[in-house]
Amino acid sequence: MTSPPLMTAADAARWIAVPTAASHKYTRGVLGVVTGSSPYPGAAVLGVEAALRTGVGMLRYLGDARPSDLVLQRRPETVTVPGRVQAWLLGSGMGPAADRDGAARDRLALAVDSGCPLVLDAGALDLVDTASAPRVLTPHAGELAALLGASRAEVEQHPLASARAAAERHGATVLLKGSTSIAVEPGGRARAARSAPAWLATAGAGDALAGILGALVATHAEQVRAEPAVLVDLAAAAAVLHGLAAEAASAGGPFTVLDLCAQLGPTIARLLREHPTP
Ligand SMILES: NC(=O)C1=CN([C@@H]2O[C@H](COP(=O)(O)OP(=O)(O)OC[C@H]3O[C@@H](n4cnc5c(N)ncnc54)[C@H](O)[C@@H]3O)[C@@H](O)[C@H]2O)[C@@H](O)CC1
Ligand SMILES: Nc1ncnc2c1ncn2[C@@H]1O[C@H](COP(=O)(O)OP(=O)(O)O)[C@@H](O)[C@H]1O
Image 1: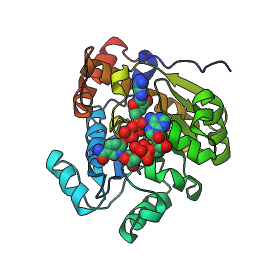
Image 2 (image 1 turned 90 degrees about the vertical axis):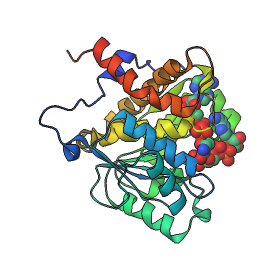
Image 3 (image 1 turned 120 degrees about the horizontal axis):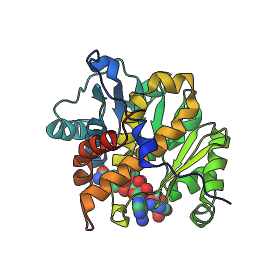
């Protein structure tokens, strides 16, 4: 099977929403985030950090006390009360449905029932059929295998066909993460992203990617509602930004996920400088 067209840095630059003098925090896009849990509070911190550094007008985080405290310690600009949002990021660092308590179920239901575009990661992948809003899934090969009832080896051997099968079955855009990440929309259009050093294969890298994508979706929410197919471009753009920030953090060596997040602002500034809007 031929691989999908690669999203370039210039393509990705077009998906960065640049504020103007008329912008305020609500017009830029508010991202709602339900991630993390007592066993995995760090996933919440990493996703919030990545989303804020990618750029949103506001971020509302809803979670248990431990992840909420850690998120606020790291990022006091986070708002931890419910309110209007334009898109939701759900599931990083959350267990499967059977492990969730009532409070976590209620928070996820609030988001799914809102009708806003959704980014479904890790523990929220199994919500895909309960939602009808435009949605994008961010599985790695193991998670996609579980979703398809296939083996991980099959997904790794046939990544494009596997992502396409899941997109069609669930009517959702799928971003299959790996050394090359592949975004596929239910209509069949696909884009690949390959710009990350292998040092990126580190725990928590996917949580940051989900935050980047959440920010891009929140800042393009109206466009996503009007034309859900753009989720494939936003997903590939998120993977490109993630890879370029990783490259900047790495400079040829190992780095932490927070180092990657710290490079998001400078990476976005560079992309906008090198690829100005025509
Ligand atoms: N600091 C944190 O709080 C972190 C939280 N994390 C959270 O931990 C939870 C469990 O995530 P895991 O993915 O580790 O789940 P598991 O370790 O349960 O992995 C699920 C299955 O996928 C396979 N698999 C794992 N990573 C893979 C990859 N990159 N490619 C192919 N197959 C792979 C595993 O072998 C296993 O069969 C998620 O909610 C995740 O968001 C992780 O992101 C790590 C960091
Ligand atoms: N060998 C690799 N080269 C480049 N990027 C990789 C490689 N392996 C994994 N990645 C990227 O790292 C991230 C890992 O995400 P994930 O598997 O969800 O890990 P976690 O759940 O620990 O955050 C994904 O964005 C993936 O594309």
